[in-house]
Amino acid sequence: MDLTRTCLLSIPLTMGLWGGASINLAGQAGLIEREGLDLPVECILGETCWVANYVDVDPADAALDFHCNPRTYNGHEGTDFAIRDLGIMVRGVPVVASAAGIVRSVRDGMVDVAITNEASRAHVKGRECGNGVIVEHEGGWQTQYCHLRRGSVRVERGQPVERGAPLGLVGLSGETEFPHVHLMVRHHGEVVDPFTGQRATAGCGREPRPVWRADRPVPYEEVALYHAGFSDGRPNLEAIRSGQQETQSLSTTIPALVLWVDIFGVEAGDQIRFRLISPDGKLALDHDQPVERAQARRFAFAGARRLTLAWVAGLYTGEVTLTRVRDGQAREHRVIRKVMLRTGQ
Image (cartoon, rainbow, N blue to C red; front, side, top):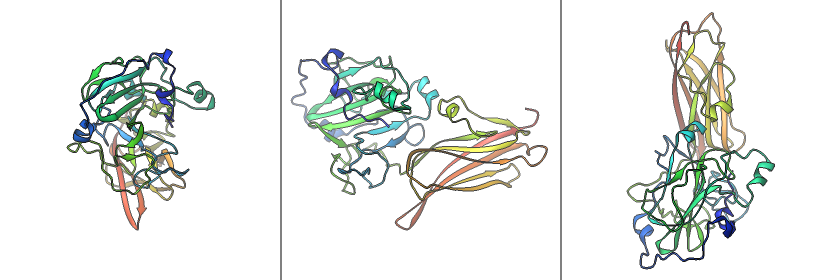
């Protein structure tokens, strides 16, 4: 969770984020209305980045995205574009300006540490955005980019930037549990959901008029099976999310073959099905796992034990399918991974 309600806006002037000089964007009204916004990350949505949380558009205590689904949390005022793991973060994923404008404020120097308890949350109070950049655009628009990697911010206050200009790198600074960039969009000071073009308090189910670029629309992700793989026993979640476990092949003598998956946006009533197909086409595993409660992020796994002296050598196929029933219609979301089991390894 990354509560960015105060974000950069509450930072004292001594932090160097806000100065007294005004930024002149007069005579430029309408660029975002005319051209729209780009993704704030250099990635391919659904392949190398995923939406972890949408804007909460419910004005009451419920947490609902613009589709009236719980793909958000209460009070969330931005869109979270997540990358796969910490290993990818270390390699460097550029955060870029979604539209041309002038840098209004910056912050850098906060460490990249996941928030795990109340003590760590208290440590970043008032600086929940972490390292970040605010860009002011014509026509009263603003975009804010949070949780950038320490030492990666490449722009200065007052600097003009073009669409797609590098601002920094995806990081883990501020109040966040996983590497991502939190994009907040404002128009005349009001938070706007970029998927609808309406105020964040407008409620769900309204006719959307997105402010994304028309020639590069950003699709809605109902759920994202964003990472999956294999292990030879109970998966090491810390190693997986830190990017330290990439299994391309295993030995035919491993005690078990386990298929795991990391998911954004599960809901109560979802069914997760794990299937393992051996090189000879036989089904080595077929396991259903019900989801009992909504979760922003869920890690799940299932596996089969070795029952003979060795597994059949060759390429195994793992399938994870999440089935969701909505309005009487069942929809499937699937990820497929393969692993080689070798003799003598």
